[in-house]
Image 1 (cartoon, protein in one colour):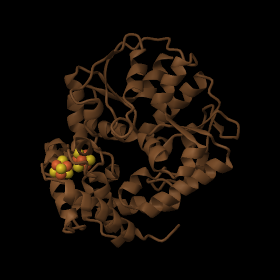
Image 2 (cartoon, rainbow, N blue to C red):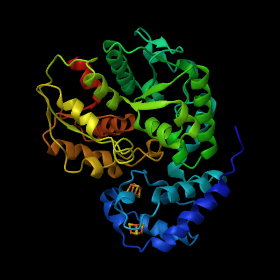
Image 3 (cartoon, rainbow, N blue to C red):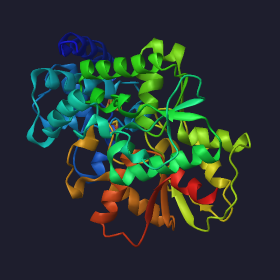
Image 4 (tube, rainbow, N blue to C red):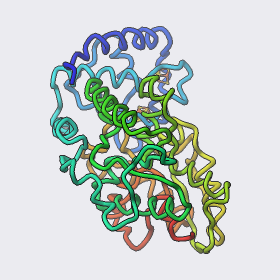
Length: 384
Ligand code: SF4
Ligand code: SF4
């Protein structure tokens, strides 16, 4: 792995974006008005931008780790200030100097785990495909239609392994010729990049691309919007030339429309759909999951007040999934309340971080019997 030299890059980014911010940010505070942090505590992106512009930001401070990179403020900013780029640049400084405030110390452990085992949990690489035991899943071989890339959470997390199983059952039912890469799969690197660790991100990206080339991969189906985003928008040009990436929510829509997957059962429940930030705001994928769900007879889909472009972040982006957030500060608690306001019995989404946070909120709020949380594949699995 290359040496950690984040400083030059971070300085250039702060100069470029900081200079932009100095020129364009007129401190209107719109970012603070829309930022979900201000629903649970006081937080000012406006102030951080001002401080970054004038080189006054304290990198030891927990505040530079708050932004979940949800993209809501960037969408609303009248001056096109690059809030996320600025925050990641500050984290590059902090990561480069090894400065992690107590609240974000877990990032150190996650980093070490990613280096050693290619996943954030510190689980053995050899156990990466244990979830597929007993299922009809092949190891990917050249000439197969698609590579299924479940990602770290679906590979190791007990709740999310169920989503990997649902996905495989659907792909098999649709007759898709697919395989997985077993222990050769590495974390996509998206979230560690947002903690400012560019060199580890590049290392993980390089390893993945090398494996895909060696194995003749052409099309990759992913379950996580974070994998989707980074493969599509952050991996080097080499990726874009050689591979196609599709999120499972899009792929389900495609398979149903091509007649390869048929819905044969009813789902008589009221649901609402939560747009993950990295599927919706960052990549504009709003229609396919909704259109897929609407094809299910008996299902009633009601929208939350904040949906699509205005979706409320679950709190897990930007590396925050690895940082303990006090119960009173969790956006996911608010989102669960919004889901209940629609009368939903099931909150459906399409992201492992969202599911992790919503499941935690169900426990915190004692909503076990009140609302269920499901991935879109878990719904489809029940109706085919
Ligand atoms: S919304 Fe944009 S212009 Fe307004 S304070 Fe925030 S960064 Fe500055
Ligand atoms: S990207 Fe989201 S979390 Fe970060 S400052 Fe903007 S609104 Fe807040």
